[in-house]
View 1 (cartoon, rainbow, N blue to C red):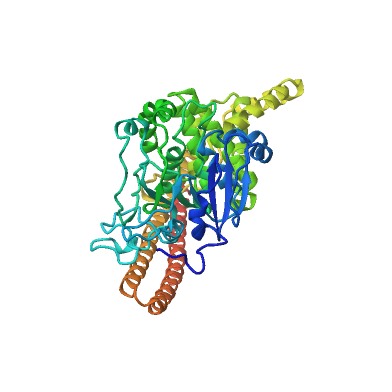
View 2: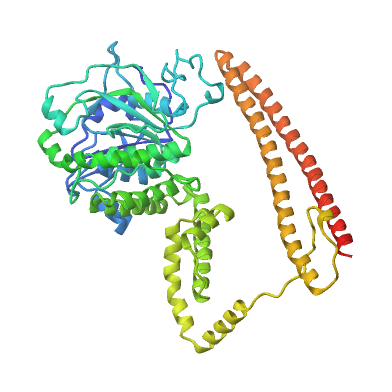
Length: 568
């Protein structure tokens, strides 16, 4: 831990983001660890002030003028005169990983007196899995000298990708203003040699002074909100981002770790200034925490962007009642996502297709609403939207459909202004209002023996038609039930195969952890067996499904024959 690795980990895949208002002399202490990496420096405050960066570092420096130039009107989402401006660095980075650190943080020492390479530890945290679904009492089981304890489910031992590594600090604690005032001389001297995954469903107060994350996994949600100049609140930027990313990570099945590495936090901020910044937040957080604890995201939200947009809608709907500030914040959350996608277009090709699909779906359902209003039919828009989501797998938001509907109102009014169009519309309504003529459909009674033969008059034919339609629907329901039962049975069999495969892999990794070549060989064998089992499962499923279809068709045909005999 005390020496710089010969080849720095992720040298070309990681950016270090530093927000600052002063010269960056603190980098001299970090030189052995930071110099191989690219720095993104976000200068806050007066853009005309010259910031000194020690020689030998590879860096880009952005000030407020640069932010305004690059983002244009969307620069409103980036805070001014607050360290929340750091998130601009996340946006312009093109690397997979981000490490961010404050300019009053220095290299800490472990209990043996060795310098701690915080960046290296963050990278190790990010490159190893997380365990959010079941707590391991030895903390991080992937660290050297640790493992899964007895009773830990083998099916969960593969873990999930780690999105965030949250580091801690020695010396000056990260306290709120009231605690600072009560404990002005308190220092954190406890070094806890542990890394743990924050369990699913548990929130935490994220601190941005010593933080790393996988930009590709969670980057679009790392927005530090609106703080500082012109805003009613400050010092909640990193915590706001932390609450948002935790809800999204829980939804997407990603992990968040906290613990090592430690840095040395050297400068205590003014508690009286902090109190002024935090005053409203201290009260608001009693509303914010329950909101995030209760927040849920629909299953249609499968990307960070879609999750964040949905969260912004919920912020406006629920927190907007707390203070108007949250309405503005919700709007800037959307602006942030728009700006992110503009600067990172290639990062979301699939999302672009989903956006187009979403807009098309919104158009389709809003056209249905317009048509129903033209024909004077009453339609429950909320119910119709729910049905479209359930049966047609619509992924668009109701708000999107509402927006398209509002835009279609004007063409509708123009359409109604034409006498020719009105005549055609009224003719359509007249036809629609006439009772439908009975249509013949195959009569297929469920129990033909119960059908009584009567005369062949018109009343009997009408009765047969009516019965036929009812029976047709009943048979269709029975067919669907049989197919649903078939699918459920074979899906369960497939899930058992997958679970067995997961347990086998976990056991192999556990039993042969000291021999990577044996582990690899045995994993290859079980993966081949798993693929063979899946292929055989799908083959048998298709065979049995074909048999089921033949059986159902034969049953319907027999009933139809019996019914035709009764009808003669």
